[in-house]
Image (cartoon, rainbow, N blue to C red; front, top):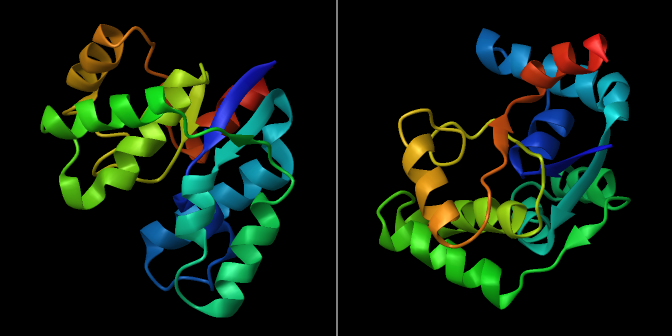
Length: 160
C-alpha cells in the first residue's frame, strides 16, 4: 500500500466553514471527497509538527482538526529530520519564517513516504522549487515524496 504524509492544510480544509471563494470551496470539497472516500489506497501518517500547527486558531476548529488527525500514526521528528529541514532553509528553498514547512518535507522524506498531501503550493508543492528540493533531499540521502493535493489523488484512487 502507498504511504501519504498528511500536512496541516488537509485537516484545515476538511473542517473549515464553507468558503465563499470558489477556489477554496473547491479545495474543501476535494479534500472531503478524498478523505471520506478516496484515501483507501493509502496508509496515512502525520507528525507532531502537524498537531502543533493544528492546535492554533479557533478553538472549535482546532478541536475538529485534532480529532480528524488523532487516528493517524505520528512520524518521529528525529535528528535526521531536523538536519534535513535546516538544509532546506539554508538552501533558501523554504524561508526561515516557514521552517515548519521544511519540517513537513523533511519528515516525509526521512520516513520514506510516497506522497505529501497538501494544499500548500507556496513552500511545499511548489513547481518552481521542486527540482531544487529534490536535489537537496537526494544529497542528504533521501528521496523526495510526490507532493500533491487531494484533488490529484482522487483520480489516482479511482483508477486503482
